[in-house]
Length: 235
View 1 (spheres, rainbow, N blue to C red):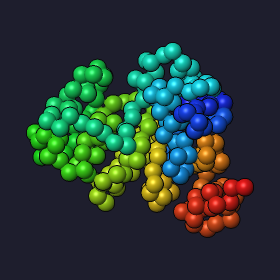
View 2: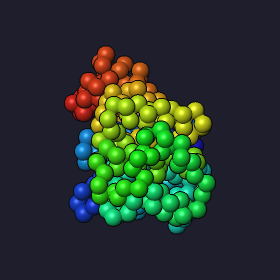
View 3: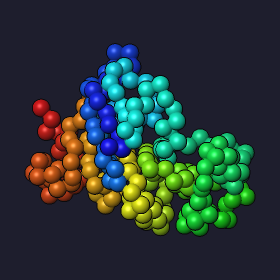
View 4: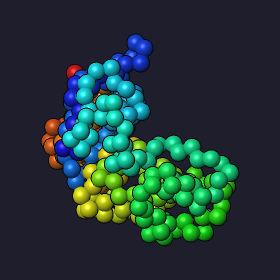
């Protein structure tokens, strides 16, 4: 398995955010991690990344426990929901800085061309629009060849043309055997690319499976309505 989560618990003060989460993520598939605000999605992802320390439970990435380790993170490419770039640094300078930090082979030129970023390489990040910053964020995420990719709201600010490019890029990486975890509030995007839906509700995994299984379980014919039904039909 690419990721294995066993009996994961986490609370912040009196707020129990994760309540015994168990999840197995198979290689070479695209998983959409969904759920309403406060369901535990971000906490689970940050636990995988080592940014949050669980109160209880075990996480393994690429068949190795992550507890007391950090080198596994080199096998993960992560796109955060909000990327806080230094405002006065230029786009090319940021790309070069990340390359130096990762000390790994990169393929940024193809991605720069794919998202039309050539005219912006010599511009400071503070002068860019939100959508252009997101394209830079995507380039920084995909320019390394890691087996696991985690994308937190990757479509934010993207125009339709860039969104098509992103979907093509995700499918290309899947075809190359990558495992991809995605959070998104755009259900059409999820429906088009996801192999598996993992739906969290009140700190627990309420549903895991393909879209067909979801439609059957909720007795809905529309994916968006099926996702909404998961919340309303919870006992």
